[in-house]
Image (tube, rainbow over all chains, first blue to last red; front, side, top):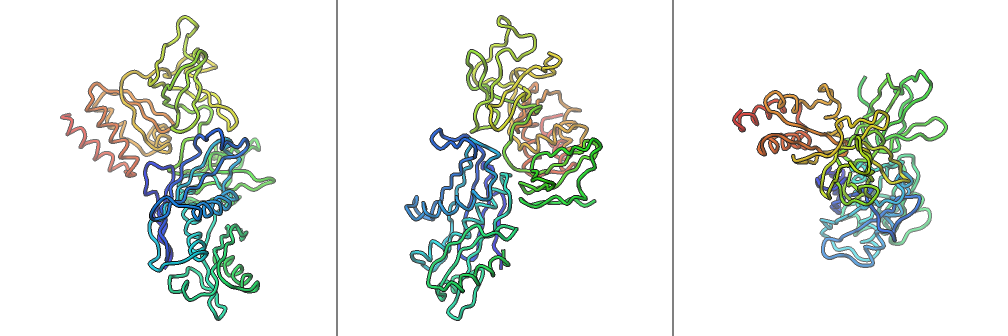
Length: 198
Length: 241
């Protein structure tokens, strides 16, 4: 079963999308290009601000790290030079968590693909100019060395390594985060599978 | 020919591009030129081609309005300075400047005195990503107002910029016949701003609100011509002819 996408659920945001895959549901809203604070202003490009809100609470250092990863991916995709001295504001609200409790690096890596996909779809919904598409997916490598895509909860608890990889439509890698124990060959195998999948 | 839908980063197939007589091709919103000869999409959308003007662009329903020169907009005065009025064209963006003397027949003694909150119908005279947007209420070449200027009374409704564009196409080409149909039954004045703001004034409050709501619903729910006719008939009946 593929991910579920709901287009433009929020009428007051410039672009919005509700994205659910096997593990998480994310509500993404995009506003922009809007006016930027003097301190965040960049002379030649648009500033990108990503806000990630977990299911409960406002979020701490973990959410700030996730924001920095998502911002880096989006910066390589958005045409920031078209709107200098403006702000593109993206808010990602996690609305549903997987029932199984994940810890540490596994938790961080598993939510990244959903966040990146939701952010990209919301940007496309809002008509923000981008130079390519982005597709992100979570891959797990099980003990026998097999790579699985679109992992469900069962796969995550049984695997030895998990990779969050994103590619654009031309096959260029845009994001690479991983958790667990794995060898370099395993990583390369995951990379190739992902490039074909995306 | 079937319509072509593109996603960001996808190239426009070269057999779709119109042949330009003078050798220049105009690129509209949603497309960019990567040297030497690739044209690729920057947003998702349906490709539109105009062979007469040798222009090609993408249509997309959502998105914020970006000012471009020559567009007519409904702007609201925020505050005034000695040289210009600062106006709001789109919310949460820097102000657009409307010169104090940019009105028909205006000089230092006889210019319109506009207060904060007043609406004006103006044309975008300057818009670039590096400069502030500038507006004018008089045509620079002829010196006449051409329907631009302060809008008194009435009410403003918000619609999406693409719907405003369809409304401005005229002759029913945009597929919106609400105004023509209602015009047969009621008298009203309307100013459509390309920035997604619509100003309406009619004799009575009920008629103004009725027509405004009808236009907003046509936009939000994507009514076709039949649904629009039905809604207009219902409105006329509710308002008692």
